Amino acid sequence: MSADAHEKLKDSARSILRDFKGDRYAFGVGCLDSAGAMAASLGRRALIIANQSDWMRPIVEAVRSALAAADVDILAATPGARPNSPVEDVYRMQEAVEKTAPSVVVAIGGGSTIDAVKSAILLACITPGEHEIESFFGVDRVSARLGGRQLTGMLAVQTSASSGAHLTRYSNITDFTTGQKKLVNDPAVIPPAAVFDYSVTATAPRALTIDGALDGISHCLEVYCGAKADTLESVEPIALAGIELAIAGVERACAEPHDLKAREMLGLGTDLGGCAIMKGSTNAAHLTSFSLVDVTSHARATAVLNPYYLVLFAEATGRQLAGLATLLWRAGYLKTDVSRLRGREAALAVGDAMQHMLASLGVETSLEQFENFSPAHIDRVIQAAGNPQLEMKLKAMPVPMDAGMVEHYMRGALEAAASGELERVETIPA
Image 1 (spheres, rainbow, N blue to C red):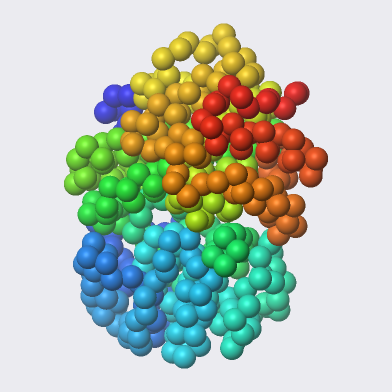
Image 2 (tube, rainbow, N blue to C red):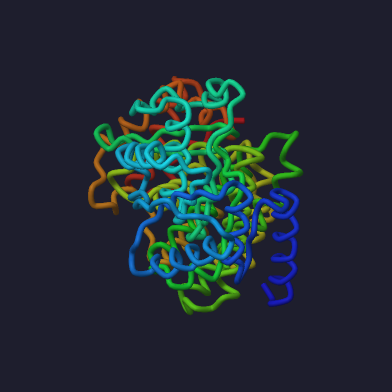
């Protein structure tokens, strides 16, 4: 794609995001100073929650300065979350919120920290003193218990081009004693204000840059493929632009980490992923990734699995496969003309192109390439798929599944993904 085409795509992405979030979201290159005014609009007594790794420390200090300039008092600071938002980190943050009673919580970090803070705030406000998140997993369970009350204000300062956690109604939390991730899905936990200065990602580790891109791509792809007739028209331009920007951005950012145009493409692309999941839902790959938290990162799990699920759902996603084929051709990963291919054959070609893209980034293309993977993980996925708290993912699949279909078709797709044999996936008949 030419430079002019990329600029037009970025302009379109900016317009979509402005329509989506309005003046409650500051995004772009060089906007970190706006964190002060954003926080002040929610309250003047702040608790900061952020990790202090070498690359994060300058970002946290810049936010502190912005808060001071806006006359926001910093009551205390506490560390952010570890990867995948362990439930223990949520409870620790809950205690910090209860102890300091801030008017605004400023969460600085990637998706794990922001997701954990969302859940910590809801617990501190609804069930103070109780360490119990389980009953909030599922759809709209927070709003049902708020009784008209408002959660403590939250400013989400995103630092990773990845999950879209700063924009969405989701809080993904992991219990590592069971190896299972679950999610809170409720509009009450959407951060009322957010800031993402795309330039802060320039110092992020390479692995985090790649994971972030893969997460954003998966959000767009799964929502796009799962979109039904009444939402496909509105979702399609968001999803395709997000995927194309994320692919172009991660390629350039890996080659030149301080290329701010690359960082802007990557940020816009993954933010469109956040927009997409507010219009639809992720489905099969995300559901599977929730049971692989002890194997690999969430982003890599979804990225590895999505090509296999494309083949599984091929008969229900003809239009989407054509759209994906076009952008993968422009990106140079699709070597076969798929214009005359349909169904399964088109999905195999598109899935193969996606795997070439992963390989070019040094990312695995099968589950068995992950050191800690075992067949027991497939059993864990199948068991989790029967949990009513995750039913939303089954319903959101391109072909909604029941228990029998999960056991037959999903297990078969996972076994193919384990061995890395895309052609082994059995396509669900139309």
